[in-house]
Structure formats: structure tokens, C-alpha cells
Length: 245
Image (cartoon, rainbow, N blue to C red):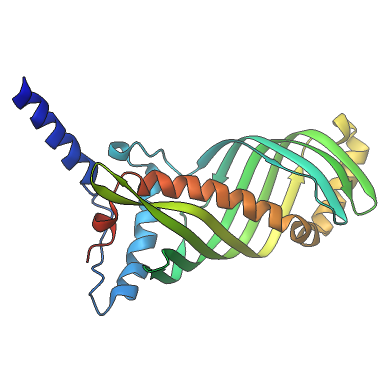
């Protein structure tokens, strides 16, 4: 029985550090280390589109999120927002990652990324004010960011589990710079079609301005979602396997 238990323990440990074929590792001593990372990272992220069954990581194309809430801001766009049954489309399609850098002393990862289009589709509920216009509703929504440039700064620490050191994301800071934003909210004003059409027309004509007012809230929310996703990977692969010496 002891032999069987020992064998199972060794098997479990080896399984925990077995890297997926899509994860190309780069040795830190490689003179072309940064270039290697810049090529390897987007390939691995794209491989997550179908999920990694052995790592119990679900597909991220689309990325499903149960719910998020965005509190009311104090600017000209002051809207309480609640989203459920969220699907994020386009996180991997056409993804480009540039200037990927890792500061191993401070455990900070930075990069620039580009997505041709990201769609945020969800059931929504909102209430507040857009400029001088009241707004409320509950229904289906779609927020589309076209030509999404982003700056990513990931702050990490480490923890030890079963004798292995793992990275852990403390904060994922992301800054959005979309070329264009499209927004649409169905069933505004409890189904008052005339008011809803007027408001969606107003939103369509001012979507870039409205997005800028809400941008910080969206960035914070996306950062929490991406931190959770990143930790799904980091918690399963020891640091020395992800970033070998």
C-alpha cells in the first residue's frame, strides 16, 4: 500500500509540472530571451482559446464570466452597471503581443497588446445619468472595442506549495486605447421603444466619449478578470518550469 501511495504521489507531482505542448519556454540566460518571450507568449495565449483540459482551464474563446458590477462614478457619466452571463469574444483572434518584459527582481511583467476586435456581450442592468440625460434599463448589451491597443502591467509575488515556488498575480493593471468603440443596450427604459431608440442613437454618436468616462471602471474590471485567468495558469505550473534559468 505504501508503494502504491508513493507512486501516486510521484505521479501527481510529475503531472502537475508537465507543460502543455503549446507552452514554449525561454531560458533566462538566452541572449535573445526577450524576443523568445515575445514570440512564445501570444502563441500560448492563443492556445488557451480551446482551453487546457489537463490543467482544468476552460476555453477563453469566448471567455465566460458569471457577473461583474461597476459602481456609480462621479463624472458627467454616472451609471451603476451590473452585467451577467458575460461572454468576451476576440481575446485570442489576431492577438499581437509586443515589448514583453519581465523584471524578475520586482516580479513585474509588462507588455503591449493588440486585438483587432473585442466584443463584450452580456445581460445588463443599469441606472444613472449620461451627461444630462437619465438612463435606466435591463436587457441584452454589446460593447465592441475595435482596434484595441492595450498596455499591460502585471504585479506578482510568489508562494511555495509542495516544495515548489509559484507565481501569483497580485494586480493586473491594463490601460485600453481602442481606435473605436460601439455600444448598444437593448430594452432601455423598460421597453419604451421611442426613448430607447433615441438613447441608443445618442450613445452611438458619442460612444468614444462615453467610453472614456467609464474607461477606468472597465479597465479595473477587466484587470480582475485577467488576473483570475492568469492565476489559473500560474497556480498549476511552477515558476522554474515557466521561466527556466
